[in-house]
Image (tube, rainbow over all chains, first blue to last red; front, side):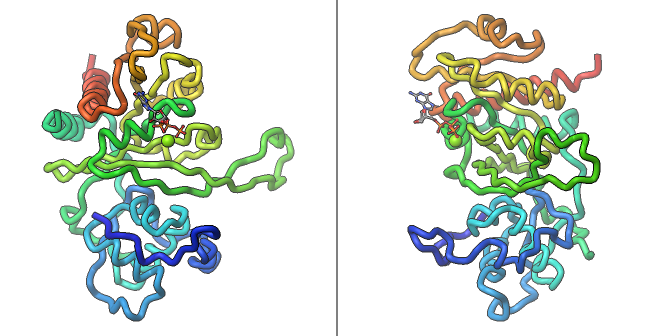
Length: 123
Length: 191
Ligand SMILES: Nc1nc2c(ncn2[C@@H]2O[C@H](COP(=O)(O)OP(=O)(O)OP(=O)(O)O)[C@@H](O)[C@H]2O)c(=O)[nH]1
Ligand SMILES: [Mg+2]
């Protein structure tokens, strides 16, 4: 689902060389309503060459629908900062997401059935 | 904003929390059940300082970084299950609403040599009304308890399932998840 993260510029001692907030210009409130499991997908409608490296990498990670939390893990950035970056990509049309979904209902039998069936197949 | 209306294009992600005290085997469990090596990331959460409740209007909040790990299991049904490991040592995750929101349920891992390490997670899920089961990670059988002994020691509700597992074994970890989903089914069944 996500690509390798070799492209991140890190230093073994200092960790990531760019402070997380610099990446998002200090912003922590994304303009789009994203949660940790919101799926984001690149639309293919933007030239990656025109994007900041962090945005380009985030976009690259969302080639297939990928949740915010996986993008954050690969970018090595806090989830709040990752939400800002992904939100920027959505605003400029480079990526898209689904409408906010209601929280999974633990009593929704169709979801439980899909999980039960899927898990049992792994046994 | 323009959302993508073709929601078929996006798999449905659901989450189950893997909790318990420090070092009980949460990351090991996630790695065994997951199709990927556990990934880790962090979130910045706002924590209201304690003891300022009566100072109306006084801004006394700070942010704390909470690190967590997670794994993933993809199903053919367009559902993707994420397993979120709660931070072991850090109490701040109790203030992190987004972690619990939308979780189908939780596995509370317990180390039989120190069951009390998992009290805090049990109290938390009980108070939040999150459905959970307790899985005793047997650690090479260092200590063997019967599930009923664990239930008594942890003062669990009779409806909360208690199972034994080996967090290093993927079949065993998957069986725990099956037991959780089965108990969600029973809880969902109208009486
Ligand atoms: N012998 C044995 N060792 C285990 C088992 N489960 C976990 N361990 C070991 O116990 C240690 C802690 O396991 P982790 O999976 O890191 O525990 P954790 O709950 O994620 O720990 P924190 O995130 O630090 O709270 C590791 O060294 C594991 O290899 C088990 O079933 N048997
Ligand atoms: Mg861990």
